[in-house]
Image (tube, rainbow, N blue to C red):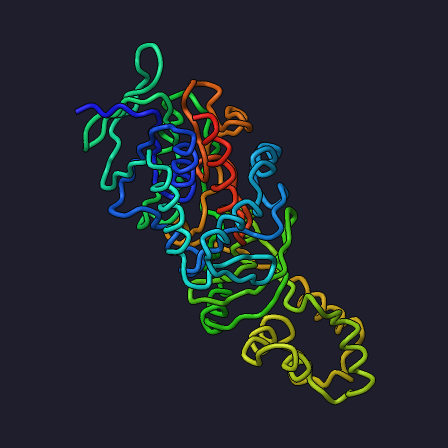
Length: 398
């Protein structure tokens, strides 16, 4: 059985569903092929089930790509305000959390239901689940034939909205990259992004003992720095600051932790040396963060002075301790990998894709949207905004 449609979308995630609805509004007949048993699985689990669907402050600087200008066109044509407008039309309750992050109040299903209702409303969208694509070929003349385990499709446009490798249990796979390569596209090497760090040295024993504790820190390396919560885990370091820095970290590198970014500890210690000369450093720091964290830092940084009153430490010694607390160097052994990664870094080289239409420059009628492209947003709703914006851009041309 051969099904004839205008557009075949591969993947029923955020970008695929958005594109299907928007293209169908133009009168295009669309079929969305999804290999999983349900659509939008990653939407439903995102943001702890609340879906951080965009951010109030979206800038090109919030994205990593080998070709950083690529995102500007799509983001400027479909902004966060456009998506927020649609969320409001549907009466979806949402809240702003810190750093401009917007989350649903009643759960991610609200966003998925909105996308599916938009598909229904447009009347030309069919969604097939449990559908495995076996082959995509260019038809003689123009268009494509697609072979699946549920029959064959013929279409003018193929949209690759297959996402990345993150969270294989929710459908992450290399299919989109392999398809791009089939049509001669260059793929930048992929790795797990927005992912916790793991350790195998003595620092792992520290993180294990502190597991469940959190504090606000600055994590930094030569490429970037982020001031957010740090969470200690049995495996290493997690929390927003770790996830953010993981996008800018390579295996084998160190990074530094400023455990007290809002303080100048050298000044703090010297003031206390005058006003409370008999006090211990751990007593002072326990006013600023959990005692269990302070005791571990004491072992790491000033163990030999742990019982020395601050008045008996020289200014140079205090400066050295402060300096260590503001830039403590750690070296992860790796990350937790794709199993828990929120996104995939790398992907389809955007220099071979039109920033206006998302169409391949190598194959007419082939489009790439969302995470399969070499575009990775920071934590905080930016990856969803890229899904919406890239889908909207392509939907006007497929």
